Figure 1 (spheres, rainbow, N blue to C red):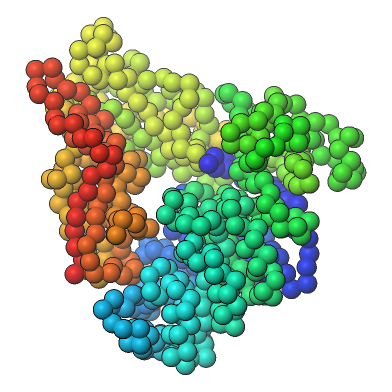
Figure 2 (cartoon, rainbow, N blue to C red):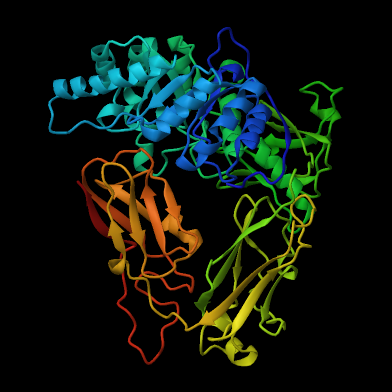
Length: 626
């Protein structure tokens, strides 16, 4: 999914107004957006984002690195008039819980403490599970009461994720300040009983958090979906409306995309589902915010369009006009179309503008009965864009290094990157044509990370380009990657400063990755699985290609990768581990910094027998939590 490249002014067609409408923007709260944000916003940027989206409620999900700024965040929320509806709270309280409570007390904020309860021992009978869990809830409820707060028990899978069990715990705990928080993304398996579950939970429900839903979505790799992308979304909204539930409704981020884009996607999807109060499945754009970003990005390089997701729609159903406030919402004939072409693709209708839109001009997108207006604005960032890091982070790298990653603080311009990056020898001369220049530059969707490839023809021995032009790096020699200050960011502003990475080329690495040599240090009931690799791995691939499973299910764990990519951690914070056996799963496409894969070298010497070929797509290492 393409992410937003520039700050935008966005006007969406509002859903119809209803009395006590649970889906009114004023009743929606943002959830799972602090640790799940590609832009890693701080308090100021996050509060600004919520204001732009018109969200006046917010639940604070966090990791340890965010707590030092919680004091600042609460102050900014109060100043902006945004209600801190809830705070993710550790069931074990501990130092982190004490920090949260102290900040809330300092600012005289009364809120809900959202707790994920630990799983009771599976060997216990039902009555004992309820009793022991209720005892813990009673203790947490007293902690909440002492601070003037409420306690919200939220479902996160397992025994304590089932509505029947949570209701039984509530009854046994007998605490007035305790309620439930229900996350649909942890309830794909209960879609068939949702109406009954909602009826039972409604008197105790503090928040109902929405998600795109379909049967067994969590088992099919479709656990987190945007509203409008799930097969059952319209039906679920109808159930909620008819239930008369009037409490807060959560809109989640919970992906590693730009949190603002993901929230906007869900808000737009919700508006589409509710249009005309018909609860009919409707198209959802990749988000109108993203549409605008893609249109604006036409200023450089190949024209880009946007895709409207729709099944069986015809190109003539999608139009984009230059808006005119003096014309009525249906008076399209009097509007000037934005020049471009529309074609049907397997993903939906794709519109490709012929020319970039003009900043400040308002445009109107029309599909079927849905209308959205938007305008492109260019606002320079408050701080100059910086090159934050050059990967790999090392003083010595193999002479057959294959990739270099550049990570920036803000989106960068595209289309001419190679004129701003040079590889220099120790004497200051340039290694000409070191990087493989390709038309489709290898940017992440948010435009903040670029992958540069050294020309493989000069990296791999025995190939003609290496024989003619020579190797890019030679063992024992010193080099520098230099990134020019003149490189413009997406706002046409130069970088804050020039950046250099000096390193020495070492001996080549022609061995495949061997996970059997990795050192695994299992966690206790809390903490993180620590993994030490046999050598530095590709920084961008570890997060996607190494994960933890239990009972065949991939676990949603925070992953931390060290800058030098020789170690990684999985899990951590106060999230408990259930005793039992787990698997560390490695995709065999995982590569090291030289392109060597699991069990296979990027370059195999013809005089050396190749390493054993691994047919499986993944391999595993087992570990146990006791």
